[in-house]
Figure (cartoon, rainbow, N blue to C red):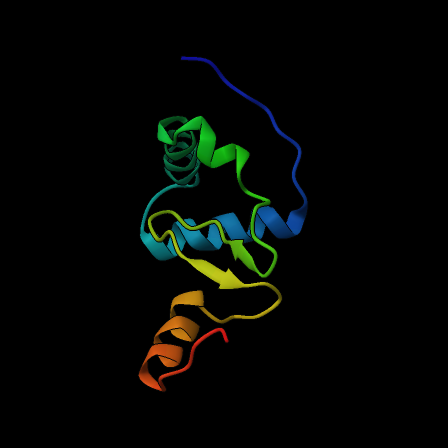
Amino acid sequence: MNNITITISDDRLLQLQQTASRLGISLEELLLIGIENLLTQPETSLQNTDRWQYLVKRPHPWRRQLYIKGRKLLASTVWQDAIANNLNIC
């Protein structure tokens, strides 16, 4: 086993600690989950993170969904509402 030291802001550390606490795991376990997720993703998915103009990925231990940039709104919610109301892009 090896150790890695990183520098992060106090706000990010607090977010990580709160997330780990909410999930009932240690901070180290949470970080290992994140690292494992990164290592198992195809490299192409890491390279295409800027391909969307209005969508953004948010880091989450198990949920992979796109959000509208600058909003707490899931892109899938907008899509479902558009379908339900018979809206289209034209």
